[in-house]
Amino acid sequence: MSTTNTTRGPVPLVIGLDLSLTSTGVAGPDWADALRPKTGMRGHARLDWHLEAITDRVRHADLVVVEGAAYGHGAQAGHHELAGLWWMVTQELWRRRIPYAQVPPVQRTIYACGVANPAKEHPKTVRARVAKGMVRDAVAERYGLECDGAGRYDKADACILAHMGRDWLGHPVVDLPEQYRRALAGVSWPAPLGIRHATTNSVESAGSCGGSCRR
Image (cartoon, rainbow, N blue to C red; front, side, top):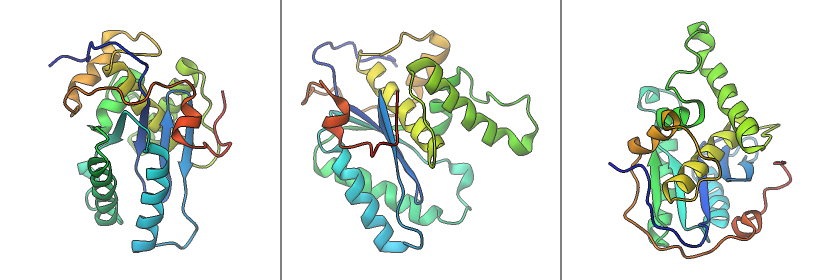
């Protein structure tokens, strides 16, 4: 499988989504935000809130890159509802004819850190948390985007997803070694697409980042 769509043209508007019931990360290559519903919101109301907030930010996208499910976490509380959110969001993208890609979590980590388990030298009990910090550090060091505050790891994950989409479309912001780019081959990419919107200001095009991201 080719890791890049070699078609050139206008710079595409790519949005990354790290879906979560409590803190959904949404980002472009140079901005990031965390969508956090009110404390106590549950069930249909929370799903509806997320869908409306996400749709507002992706409505002009040429490509949306969504993190897929971590199947090893299927027994965790909220998994059933989170799966529902994933299908609601991708159904809305399909309905609006916005192409989307599905990225397994491990491929996102490889693209950010070059390896699937960057924290393997740390104790098993803290590896997941340390790895999240390493992805966040990669976003800051490589792209100059500081993901701080509540939802900082969700923002960083979404930013990596957006960069994966830009890279696949042949418009990488940074040229990465193949050790990182091999992650693109493990993604479910859509059929070749035409670019609907050239980006001049991705923050304006995608919606406000709420002041929670900075470069």
